[in-house]
Image 1 (cartoon, rainbow, N blue to C red):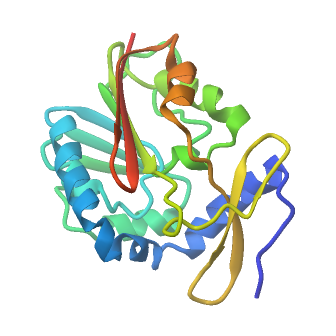
Image 2: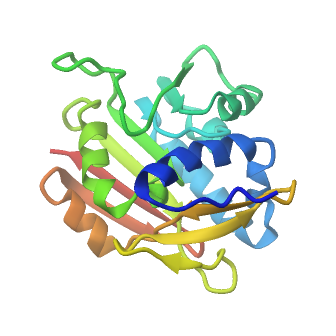
Length: 230
């Protein structure tokens, strides 16, 4: 069976949730690769340190792979995702549920904090999500995320680096410059997935008006971006 469809922006926006819902029970296989374990261990420890004592809004929680380590010393943690299937996997993990809450939410239409209301969130996290945002929607996505946060909040984005011979190759690039990968699930179905690999310069340009204390980190297979809202 093949789930390959034309990749207009609307079509791709609809496809992504379906793909990750189907992938829910096998998603974390990607983190089992032995050569990535040192990076993953480093990131888990680092994330826990960044969110210690924080009230965190997480976008696109997915199956919650980073959740146990990242939320360990947080004061509260709001998990969000558009797919109930992946959040059910996240809820099955060993977590401190007294400080965690789960909510179905569209990452492009976050509405946890009403307009004009005081935000309870002094930090935000999105892991392995930003690379799936079409280039022309990145600025708007960041703006609506920032609108959900308290002034001076810390934001951490984390995603994959492209590593030739290890990363899934980019199969094509559209007219807007977005890259796409062809991915297979265990059932043999194939899916075209939008996947961009931003550089620090691109991110700095996007954030220049809204962020301060910008910190970029590159590991072998991942990058992290930390900043504070002005």
